[in-house]
Length: 600
Image (cartoon, rainbow, N blue to C red; front, top):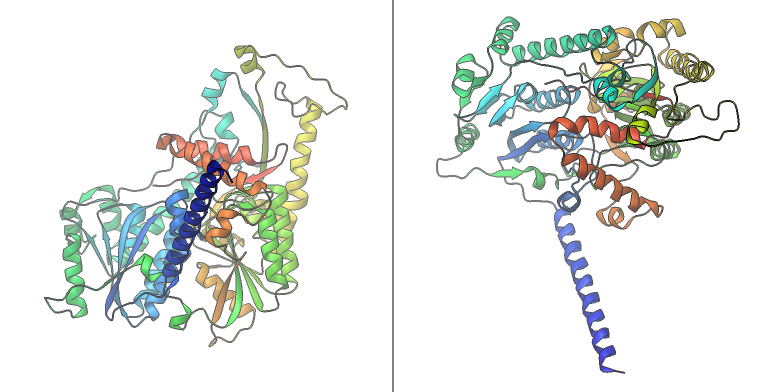
C-alpha cells in the first residue's frame, strides 16, 4: 500500500471517528434533556409568555438553535400550568412576559388557564418590562401584575389596518380579473381596490367592537374596576409605571429582583434564603404522568395549523410557516379513527383556510371518522373559510369568544399582465386547441364565455358544496338560512355561537372534556392525550423519514422564511401572504380568510 493511500485511509478513519463521537455526544445530550429534573419544594416556576405561540410544535432545542424552529407553543405553556397546579413542589408561578404574536383567541385561552391555576390557591404573578394591550390582557388574569419603575403600558386601544395595492398595480400595468362570493369575501379587494368596500369596513368595525368590548370588560373584572374607568384609562394611555400604579392597572413598580422578593415573603422564605426557581425549559422535562395527569383512556389530538394545501404538512420544526397538508391530516384522522384504543378525536384548527379541494378531503375524513367515534373541533385564533370547512362536520365545535371564524365563501382571480409585458418589452403568443384552453392565460382578461365558466365553477362550489355541508353539519334549516350568515362574513366566536356556527366556548382543554363526555368516559376517570401524527425525533426530522423531495421542500421553506424575515417588518405580512399563494396550485378555487387581520 502506498504512503498516500495510507494517509487517505487514516484521514477517512479519523473523520468517521469524529462523526461517531459527535453523534454520541448529541445522543447523550438529548438523553440528558429527557431526564426528570430536580424540582425543590416550595419552588417558583418561571414561564415565558412571548412569541407567536403556535398551537403545537415538535421543535426541540437543537432544531431551534440551528434551523429557527419555534420551541414554545400554546399547548406546551398550558401543559406547564396544569402540571404546576397538581405539583405539590411548585409553590407559585411567575409569568415573565415578552411581546406576544399570538391572536386574541389564544389570549383568551391563556387567561382561562391562569384562572384555572389560581383555583389551586397558589399565587401567580405577572411581570413585564413593557406591554401593549394583548400582553396586558393576559397578564391581568394573574393575581398581581408588576412592571419595573422604568416600564410602560401601551394599553391605548386597538386598530386594524387594511392595505390596498390597486394603485401600485395600475402603475405596473397589472390588472386582477377576480370574482368573489359574496360581499364580505373581500380578499381580492386588496388587489382590485384603492380603499375599503362597505362590506370590509362593516365587518372590520364589527370585529373591532367585539374584541375591544371584551377586552375592556375582562380587564375591568380582573382589576376590579368599572368598564367606564377602563375605557377612560385606555383613552389616556400610554401610562408609565407610576401612572399605571396610581390608576390601579398594576400592583407595583418593582424590578425583577424585588418581585422575587415579594414571592419569597408570600411563600414564607427566610430573609437569607435564595428563591428556588425552576425554568420553563427544565420543567418541560417533568412528565405529566409523574403527577398523575394524562392517564386513562386515549383521546387523539390532531393539530392542523396554517394555510390548507395539498400534500404534506409543515410543522415548523425546521423554520418556515406551519401549513396544513391534506395528506398528513387525512392520514392522522384515519389512523386515529382506526385505532381501537382511541375513544374520541379532537381536531385543533388554527387556519385562515386555503385551497378548496384539500379542505374537502379533510372534511370527508372527519365525516368517516364520526361513523366510528366522536370528533370534536377546537378552534384556536382562526378557523375561517377553509378552516371552517374542515370543522363544520364535527359532532361538536368549541371556540373562544374572540376566535375568528366563519368567512363561508370563496373567491378566485387571475393576473392580467399584458401592459406590464409591453412595458418591459416582452411579447407572448399562444397556440391553442379547445375553445377555453387559454382561459387562464396571463395576457388577456376573461372573455364573456370564459368568465361565465369561471364564475359558474365558484357558484357551484359555494351553493352546491359549501352551504349544503354547513347546513347538514350544523343542522341548520336549509341552504338559504346558511347563506344568510355566510356571504364570506368573518365572525368572532361569540357571534358565531349566536348564529349557530359554534356550539360552546372554551379552548383545547374544554374540547378534550367534551370529547370525553361524548365518548361516555366516566367523569371521574382521566384521559390520555395522544398526538397524531406521532411527533418525530430530531434525527428523524433531520435525516428524513419520507420521500426524497422532503429535504428539498424543507430547504425551500427555510430559504423563503429567511428572505421574508430579512425584509422590513411592514412588508412581511404581504410577503408571507404572497408566498402562501405561490404555494397554492394554479386554477384552484380558494376558501381563505379575506384579510390578514392584525389588531393591536
